[in-house]
Structure formats: C-alpha cells, structure tokens
Length: 544
Image (cartoon, rainbow, N blue to C red):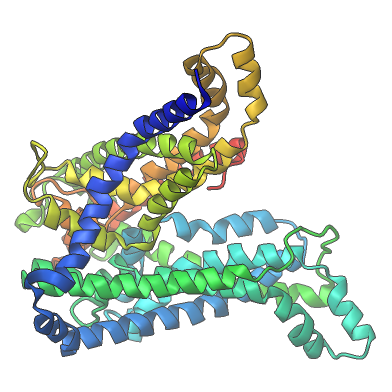
C-alpha cells in the first residue's frame, strides 16, 4: 500500500468516526443557533424592523440592566472572594481544605435551587423579608455574588498559593511599607488571576437566567429574560432573535476579555512553605472568611427552614405533598413525577453527551488540525447561553427533519441538556485522553492486538475513571438545567426545574412551600451525584 493510499484511508477513517459528533453538533447546535442569529438580522431583509427592536426602550432597558447587574455581581464577587482567597491561599491552618470545598459548593448547585433559596430569604415571611429586597436588583446581585464567590476563590487562592511569600518581605527590607509592598509587589503578581476571574464572573452574571426570572419577577428584565418573555408572552420571534444576537455579542465580549486576561501569566507552581497565621493574624483570617461563609449558609438554611414551615409551626407537610398533584392546577402532575421526568431526561442527556463527548475527546486528543477545529466548534457552546440554545431548538425543530418529527416531543429536553453539558464533558475528558502514553498502544499492536482490541483494552480501561466522573458531571448539569429546558419542556411533562419555577410563580403558601421542598430535594440529588463525580475525578485526575 502506498503512503498516499494510507493517508487517504486515515482521513476517511477519521471522518467516518467524526460523522456522528459532527452531525449532532450541526443539527442540534450550529443550525439552531445560526438560525436564531440569521433570523434576527436577515428575516425578510427588513433591517429597519431589526433596528426598531434594538432601539426599543424595553431592549435598551434590558441591555443596560444586564450589564449593570453583571458589573455589580462581578464587583461584589471580588469584594467577598478576594479576602477569602487570601485566607485560603496565604496561610495553612486546620480545616482549610474543608472551608475551601464548602465555598466552592455554590458553583455546582442548580441555579433554580439558588433562586429558591434567596426567594425563601427575602420574600413573604423570610428571615430578611424586612429589608424589602424581594424582586429588586439588589437581591439578584447578592444571589449572583453567592454563585460566583466560588469562582474567585478557585482562581485567586491558587495563584496566592503559588506566590513566593518572600517577595513582599524582600520589598519591605528595602524600605517599602506594608501597603506599598502589597500594591507594588503582591497585587501585580495576582493581577492576571484576578482579571481572569473577573471576566469569567462577568460572563456568568451576564448569562444568568433563572435567578433574574425568579428573583426579579416582573420588575427586573435582562436580555435573557426578555428573550423568554418575547417568545412566551408576546410571540415576537424577531425581537427574541435580535435580543439573542445582543446576548451573543455580550458573551463574545466577556470571552474576549477572559482570553486577554488569561494571556498574562502569574506564578504557576505552588511554593511550599505556607505558614500558619500568627496570633495577631487569626482574627483577620476569620474576618476574611466570615462574609463568604455567612453568604453561603444563610440562604440555604432559609431554604430548608421555609420548606419545613407549616403555618405557625414546622412539619413535613410540604415534603409529603411531593406525592400529590398540587391544588389549583399549579401542576398537572405530582412533583415525584416531575422528578422522575428529570431523572429520565438526565440519563438520556448523559448518554447522548457521553457517546458524542467520548468520541470527540478521542478525535481531539490526537492534536491534529481537524481535531482542533472540532474542539473549537464543541467549545462554542460554552460561549452561547442556554437560553439561545433552547430558543434555537424551538425555532428550527418545529418541523419534520430528515424524516424525524421532534415537534412537541419530550426528546427535545434531553437533546437540549446534552448540548449544554457536552462542552464541559469534552473539556474534562480531553486531558485524560491526551495523557495516555501512545507507546502503550504501540506495544499492544506489536503483540498482535487489533485496533478495536487496543481501543477496548488500553484506551477504554485508562479512560474509565475520567469517563465516569465526566458522565456524573453531565448528569448533574442535566438535572439542574433550566435555561434551555424552559423553552422546550412540555407543560404536561415538566422537569423538576420547570416545576419549581412554575410553583414559585403561583400564589399560595402551599405552592411556595412545595417549591422549597422540591428545591431541597433537587439540591440533595445533585449534591450526591457531584460527590460521586468528585471521588471519580480525584482517581482520574481529570480536568473537571
């Protein structure tokens, strides 16, 4: 066989394997999202109508609110997270790892659970109802800070750990004061990680959907919630598409800022010698951690307390109501049925994402140019909000496609969840796939193993822990997904997240109490899965 023939066969084999993931991404991500953007700009070539949407007072208000909330959430997250990062990264003390794990918990909680927690805190007879923050931008900003403090802690505490402690001491021996040493030595060294964390937090804040929809009610509208309202209340798809275009522009700006921030490099290797805090520093460490810990505990405690509150006392009535159909037609099915729907769709989404994600990871791990292009297309989904994905699926799959009719089908829910989970799954699997020593494959082949046997006996065995961790992560994402699910879930077949949102929007203490109990149940389910994922991740050493 000539070298040219062998090359052609390798190309054909690569594309044969890549056909399934490429088809999945094209049909369920590129085409829907591309259609949304094209519809906003090019429908009937009516640019005047598109410009009219952009200049509406509702649109301008939504854009200004989105950017304002994102900036406030970013500043608040840095204000609370940086002192905590200092206490965790600068000193070694008993319980440090437990506190760090505790502070990173919010990042894995479903947004609907966090929204329910702050609703329990600020609304009605909540612990802080007297502050009058219910359905105000301030409550949303606090919830955004709750979510994103973990990002700041994760980014900056690691950089602080890697910072040689002797740098500031050297500056002080040369005559600098404590504040001068901090401003001229420590802060510049940490600047790349702080800027990178701020850009990521801004991205998360600007694409927040469930928090704004539930905590803002009808008073606060961002670009994401305005897309949802334009589709579900006004049936104005052109306006929704134009707003989706605006949302993509904001996300692109945040990703560009994140990329720019990531180019600057700080210290990357952990330096041994973290010392315990001196007696005079212990109070400062406790004070630095206190806001983040209080912000974490209070809303979750309020959620549990409100889920148990029945009239003037406490009981398990709301948990018992999970087995019954809610009164006044709040939901067509009991909550346990919605939870079962979520479990089924999450399992299917995990399977879809797993099949596509593992294939992409194996193709990308070879570091070829076409593999890099496939990885870039897959990662595009990270930069597109779930709301835009859901809207795109709603607009493009409302017809018979290739002989398959997905209109009003519940299959759209796991498909949407798989699209959202896929880039994170691939990001977790690629480092593990690249870590496999190619000499192991060569050794197996030299002993007579066929390519299929090498795949199943070498790659599959070495990838098993990373795949298990990634699948558990994908399952947890699918269970808590709300942005895309809100568009494609059928009213008569709600998932747990859409059921909670619907109950919170209905009046009545029983509906709200049932929503809180359901949110606690969802948090426990996702938390248990994430604990398994974390255990497997530790064994795999993957990049989750």
